[in-house]
Image (cartoon, rainbow, N blue to C red; front, side, top):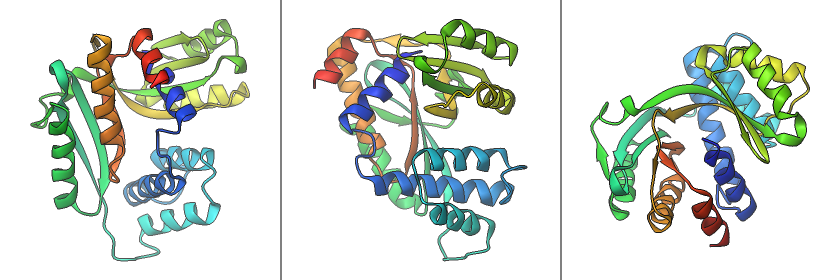
Length: 251
C-alpha cells in the first residue's frame, strides 16, 4: 500500500498535483463548505470540519479564506452557490477499479466531464455499488520516516488501535478504523509527529498489478481525472510497482 505515498511524493516533486495554488484552495474551500454545512461550524464537535481545517492549514490557506468557507457552509454567508457531493465508481484499463469523490455546484457539468475522462483512457463509469464493495474506508496517516523510527511508529499505531503500520522507506503510513481517526491523530500530535497527510481514504481490499506500460497508461488516466475542477479524491486498486514508479518519475 506504500505505493500511494511514493506516487504522492513524485507528484509533489514534479508539480503534477494541483500545479496552480488556486486549484488547491478551491478544493479545500469546497470541502470546508460541505463539512460545515453537514456538521456545523464548531471544529471541536465536527470531526470532518476539523480534518478539513487541518488540511487547509497544512497547505497554508489564508485564515480569512478558511473562515469564509466555514461561514458559507453554516449559512452565515450566503452567496447563492449550493454544492453537493458525488461519488463516482468505475473501471479503468484491464478491469482496474476506481472510486472518485467530487464536490460540485453543477452536476450536469461534472457527470459528462467524468464520463469523458474515463472513456478517453479505455475505462467506463459503473453503477453505484458495482465497485465500492472492493474498498474499505480507513483513517490514513503519512509522515516522514525522519519524524519517528518505524519501531516507535509501529508501537504507537498498535497502541492506538491501528490496523496496519507500513514502512515506505522515506514515509511511514498508518491505517486505522475510521472511528479511531481522532485517537491516532491525538497520539501522533502528542508524540510531536507532523503528518504529511491525515485523511479518510478508500483502501482497496485487494490490489492488482499491471505491467509497466499498462500502469503508465492507468496513471495518465488518474492524472486526467484529478485535473478536473470538481474532483476531490481518486482511489484505485492498482499496485504501482517500483519499476512503474521509476518510469513515472523519469517521465
